[in-house]
Length: 264
Image (tube, rainbow, N blue to C red; front, side, top):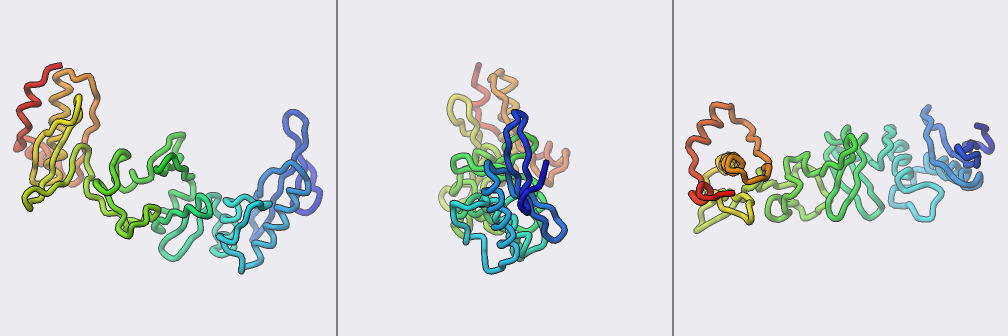
């Protein structure tokens, strides 16, 4: 590897072809800016990075394509410049929160206590769902709040301010936390209805509390698997209940007689 113009390094691929890497050192940190096909492109990236790190009038949304720097690197450099913390993901830290920039028009908002996790876990989007790459798996970021991957916005959870990109805890109103449970109002009375899917949705029963409805789902799943339904059901884990309290709750519950009549 040899250094040409300031910030540019010439190197070779395994096939012997040449490419160029740009980097810059700022506040004692060596930062890679990316790989380029030409020396000129790599040098432009170095010059742009140097200007960006010293020009505080440039903000994240001043980015314009085409640019010598990727948008992700642009965000990382500005955050380092303004907040003295280099993060390799496109994050900009604010007071008590931070922005995660997927692109200039798609900006996710998080509480500050999520910074450690998202500093090392890259967010991707598939359809309308956002996932974090975690040990080779794609984990729905809503799962971190106890929202199931197949939960339905507007039924199981709500964004309080209407911004579906605002994942701050105060903006998430979780209505239905458990598998098979929905909160419903009948004749002015709030209840929790439990359903389980067999060849369609079967009503397991209506219950006074969310925890009771969740436990009823577990009992229905146990019953159906014992009957040989041939399907493995997820189970609800109910926080705050000891084993004795959970068992007492289950003993008090009644399931729909139709479940006992099913044969597989």
